[in-house]
Length: 622
Image 1 (cartoon, rainbow, N blue to C red):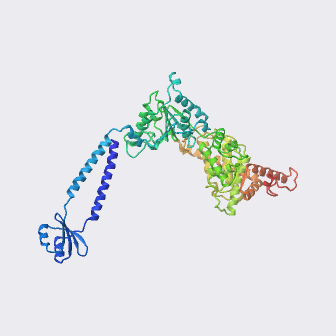
Image 2: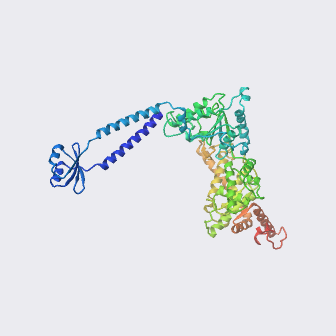
Image 3: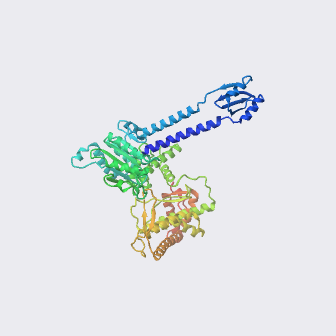
């Protein structure tokens, strides 16, 4: 019925267009009409050169070439009167009734044909057009298969899916024990973690046909099209067993009917119902496995994600440091790396990167090396590629005023010094005042390892480090700028979570006052539990006290390290970027100078190490 409605809609659209086109053509070709008396006046004045009679209508051409038509009551009598005149007279038949009847016949016949085609059961060959959006990869057509060797950073997922490969290769060894093949496997995780690549690797390992389909391909404007495509997909899959059916972004068609109410009559509801029925129709010996990938497992319909349809859920998360190292090795196989490139160090400095981002990192580094006409990719190219991915392209056209640049240097120096002196803060990796993306400068910190849990001292030191930029501005210039906006946002978010979610406030105790609705897409939202006004005021007070203490601690540290702060900002103004090794040298020089002035050590002769006596970065060359 849905197909009939769709075809009739297209049919009436075409017929209506033809009628409108014919109407406009008739209006354009129609001659202007005059009265019979005006026509007789033209005849009496010898102003008519030609007359064409069609029934009672006369198409008149005047001597001047003007044409018009007129209705003649007695054409035969008028012709007798005009026989002795030079007027040319012609006759033609009126075929309008015949054309009208033929048009009605064609329209009626075509209407019946459309209805017949729509209601006739489709043959197997007719499903090719509906199945055109499906990508079928077969062992005969593909020479280069993606295998588990091409997938790195997800050892647990590969181990789980290895059983599926064994099922596809030899299902008898499991069937004799009473085990049956999982009907469906749901791959869930953030974007870029390799869900699609892992699905292709399963087909590559088992060497079976691989049907790739997107969830959005099922959903169409016309009701019933998506459901028919689902049936076509599984019909074709059963012909090529054993095989794998992969549905990417299944949340586009399988979203919950609770959050999006549906009576089952709309397109999405019918498509989901068809998918549920087809997945239930598999037998234990069909040897068809449905793989699906999604970033939003929380919105899937419970009837779709239950065991029996998707028997397994495999979560893919961003890899750890060892996984990132293996992924970098996979993606850099065809790249020429320089002797100074250490993939383990690059894996250390790319915490939180997904597999797709690491592949992009290697590609960006190769592009930068090619731009510089280098024979190999150097470490600095990876550093530049990382900065480009995380912060954006370097904004060389931004020209800062000297005062603004000075404030920026002190701001970033404040962040770096606080991170250096606090015991639980992450080490400083790079300090720069070169604008990139929306940031004018940045102090990059790299953790010593991937963190899965955060202690209270670490979070307090993190807040103190974030507030170090504003503390340096107030300490040196006694002013406040907008450069600390993002720092305040991050610090307030951490403090709020410490008080409301993680039970790190002595006044509020070990109780949660907020819940976070996290998803793999990163759109985290915090919902507060119902609470009294007194509790809300206490929460605000605890957050304010925590931020105030951290800010005061940052001011105290920078007040004791004024010389270090001034030395670091002066060098930043000269070189604009300082790495971790250079930062340690500046710190040692500042401590040496401070000890000399305090008299705790003997004053040394002039050297290029101390930042007060020259460019301390020359120490590296010496």
